[in-house]
Image (cartoon, rainbow, N blue to C red):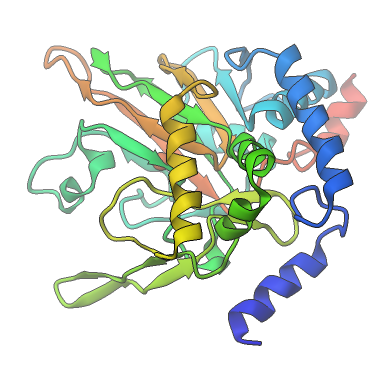
Length: 319
Ligand SMILES: [Fe+2]
């Protein structure tokens, strides 16, 4: 067994053997599936939760957020006034998000300021720093195993004059829809050699080494489902056997069908905190007379865990 397989086996062994995401656990999957679909029926994905960087979430709010995240894998939040990057990070901490990932376009504090940059800026070659549409993807799908992105957060300081909405698709729901239709194709999406991402080489310097891995995996530690995906055809090589092609086509069909996706257009003071679900962005247009669109983004190695926020003991005592 090679090092990669060793790693995957060790990760799975760390997880509860009853994980609903393990293909052999049909009973656990059925129970999880029923709970998931029922909570999605009962709750509203577009509900907005009031939060503050300097006030710990109350027990009841935490419970409501836990249900929301279990159902949809994201929650929309709103602050009373616009917070700075530090406040944004503090809010994310209350969701148990602490291990922040830094990417080359991020600011010194590892938070990325998503805005249209000048053509002379190196980042202008990357779509997030332009006003162009971003197609379906999960964040950091090109990251190595040790830097797997399990959650990210966006916070809107200024919205564009037109466009700039986000669309979201719960990756657990994608898993569910595929498993219901074809466990065999789901197995293909969990194969560790399904995707290969060539290295990123800029000016003869390796910015990122070659990466490979599955679309769906179970994360060590949290035992949550992780999805790595991009609908961009460039800079990614998919395994080309018939079953893998059918599996990837099924993902595309479900995304194109659009029925289970959610569209949101963040307003200033609003954000979305999510496990690393499938998402995209509409193209947008800034009004030159208004402040340009500015969204803070932070990516995390943790998955959302509302029991891992700061000072919970203190919060419980206050109730
Ligand atoms: Fe993204």
